[in-house]
Image 1 (tube, rainbow, N blue to C red):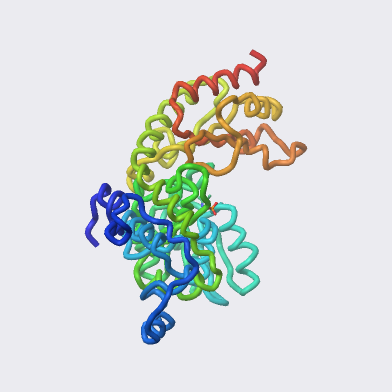
Image 2 (image 1 turned 90 degrees about the vertical axis):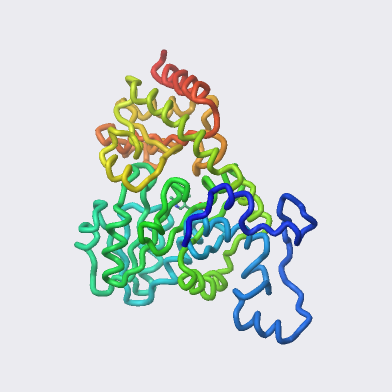
Length: 392
Ligand SMILES: *Cc1c(COP(=O)(O)O)cnc(C)c1O
């Protein structure tokens, strides 16, 4: 498929303004059902719900504009937009496994992907092995005769583990195994998994696509055949398609996606440099930093990186980390990322204080999301919080 111009995709593709009074902004087609005048036309829609508009649990015109843009951004043939990133993971995985099958997943995928693999799917006789390392050989080593699916997330969050997408896709193709990658960190602007041979790409659109911390949504892109298979079964059965208003918010978010990422990229670089030079920071993790352990592989397959980074606080004291987080005036403590506002989460929030061990680096990790604020504004906030936490 020819690569379309990014500006065209974002500003025009999928939009037919003559259909709606030449309005610049697309309408929110807030309807559950669609009217038919001919029985034959209704029959056709029953037979193939992807052939037209029947009912908004299936297709909807506002959602369709978004589907076309998101498919084109990924260089994919087709796309489905769901009510959350977790729903996108659920539908894309479920569509490609059956009882007795085996999945190979990256170690430590997103929390609710791991719950699916470790808790839900075993109830139906589907097992998962977690692979360590990012090379095709690391995946080949744990394949079984019944492996049907390889599930990746590169970079993953917190540690930004990188997997060789092209190498693993080639391995999978040679064995008839489907590949899925969670591309939420990079978005299609900074990483193009389909071009590297991956079958299905998923994203949490809650993050950068929405970009304003006001919508929960997920994306699946892939070939016409794989997307149709998901649509006709999991998508319609689970009923987790996105609602028209949320689709409209994502369309609005998309208009500024490239410039938001560009801005965050520049600010992230400055904040990272500040943290790397700070005496209370033992180490930082950011995939496109030359000091990152897997920098070369990241650079090879990613066109950019921004926003999320992790730093290890140099201290023996949980209280100091708590004091630092609670002293921040402008950086909010909250989950998620990709919005306009900078966010922080200390790893120790998920660890029983009695089990906090300062000798474990992981316990002293903080994940920072750099938003749309100026670098100076964020660095000043970090600086005063370090001073406050150390009693300065
Ligand atoms: C947030 C996130 C998800 C889940 O997306 P939701 O929209 O919250 O359901 C999946 N993968 C990654 C990497 C995420 O950060």
